[in-house]
Length: 461
Ligand code: 4AD
Ligand code: MG
Image (cartoon, rainbow, N blue to C red; front, top):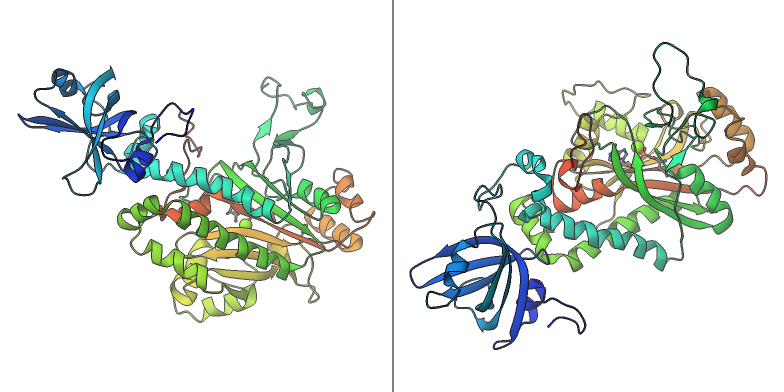
């Protein structure tokens, strides 16, 4: 059952491949205990899958009294014989031989066999991991984390571990967490030259600038790491600490970039469907009805692409009463993005060529002189999951853009050097790992797809 040399028989392996008559030992936690005069049933979960292994303890069993103390949440090791199960929903169950009750959980175990609200589960994140929903999230997260690397490694991309401490503000949005060893002093102006690094530094908001640097040596590269943003927007889609994957491809324009993002998302969804069928079926049943159909459809249909200007036209013609008015030159709000993908288009949509004023300094100016080669990928239910662009590879244009945005050339001398020594057209994007997880699980709050979410005012656990 267990691989030779491994110490345990995961419940998943027992349920999938266990044979009748086989002697096994299972280690886990009691999900429920119910009983009659004749026997006690313990449902054991060990995190290997959604399903529990049912353990049967007859009343004549010498350890029957112990089984009765094994209340919900208790930790146990049960050794016994697999037998075919007369019960519905499982092929085999475990006829208990010996029961080792490692610890009987206190009677007030906070996760009971009923639906708890997500808010409540977040407040007990140390035990939330033993709930069905978060268990499924954690397994899917683990599998898809690996799939990120797999996708890029299969294509020969080099993995760059971008630094987490940096002096640059790639996005220019200013939502940064400062990193300092100086004691706070009231009143006086701070002399940052006395700080640890001799200047003001922050946690990274994006590894993109370093990624561009690597793309000028390795052609195709990707970063994948924690990203930090101090946006004080307490929304269901923003976390202060999240994971972003940022591929950067050399000798590539916006169309190449779009194709890469589309291929990536498809690969990702396929990996989830193939490798986590049980967990996704659970999400389909309990979280978002029609989730599996939605994901399968993505594998077959092409994504839509519209320009920002077309998007504005569609929104203006929609007849909808938006909270934020729509007009060319203003950024799309999430209500606009949702209208476009959910009501108007009904599938993942790239919006490209945004006004240059509302996008970052590094994006390539289009020939119209008014828009830049930006792309956002919007999906129904979540909104933006990818943000990217073709980069400005022409020195004079880049310098002009930096001037407009007040980005100091002396601090970005190395970034400018890339345009001096073998500059090439290049493009890239950032994909928010948690945003994709929301899309794949159907969960509507980012806090429910992160083990220990960090949001304004909340850093518990
Ligand atoms: O659109 P963004 O800000 O783009 C960049 O950071 C570029 N430097 C990427 C690049 O071109 N290399 O962020 C990219 C993605 C968003 O589309 C979103 O999915 C996710 O990162 N994201 C967040 N996810 C969770 N919480 C937040 N606060 C996020 N901010 C961005
Ligand atoms: Mg963005």
